[in-house]
Length: 87
Image (cartoon, rainbow, N blue to C red):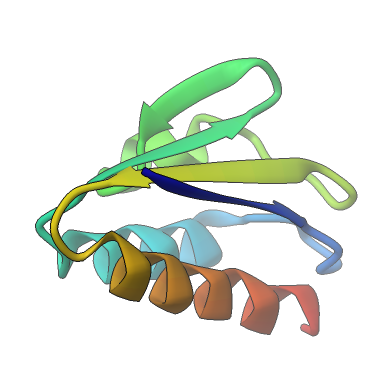
């Protein structure tokens, strides 16, 4: 299991478009991916679940990944969230 915590600092937080980018990226991997924020845990591969976290600017998002390609998945998802942070 690997994990990362990333603070979302983009103007609109993790909006619908960014949630979709995260979920589509996560779906490419065989590993189980859980996103946590605001006291909730959801399947990181499901767009609607990620959107339901209601991540606003300044929120800390924690990603937990377990599986055969967990390192590659963590790198890819961290890159997606960091790209959002700079928007």
